Length: 157
Image 1 (tube, rainbow, N blue to C red):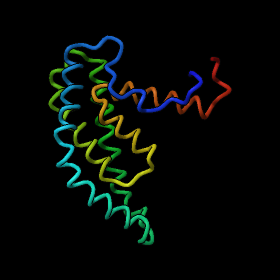
Image 2: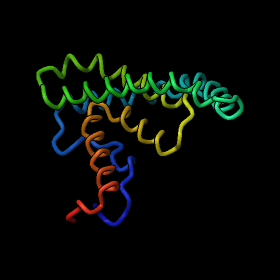
Image 3: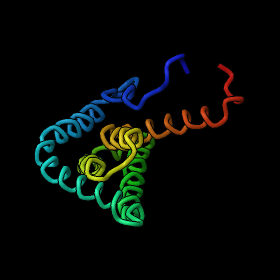
Image 4: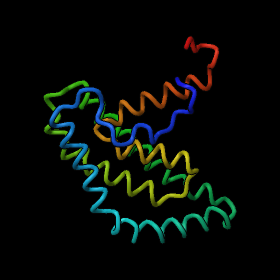
């Protein structure tokens, strides 16, 4: 790690060291779709975010009300990371993964925007969705970064 703190935004917009044409196409489809869905998703997510934020703060046990949304996100992120893992490990399947992963990334991005969350958690979740088909690589780097923070004595930099 260098002197400055690692940020999820450092990974945004990257395509890896040696992107294939299908990686560029898939990443481009995710980016274009997120751009085209921005206004429609804001129409849906902003009122929902407002309502859920109010419920979270005002209703006793409001945080528990958000538990089903956390479970849904866990399913989405598992699918994002596992399809991204397949993208990395089984290149012949990439053409088949595009129609699954791209819409899943759009849904994940919209879902994260609609649920109240800690800002740093939100950035991490958006990065995982927006970076598909590179979500597995980003997930691995997030985990390594977290391990370095939790176990600083194991760093030999």
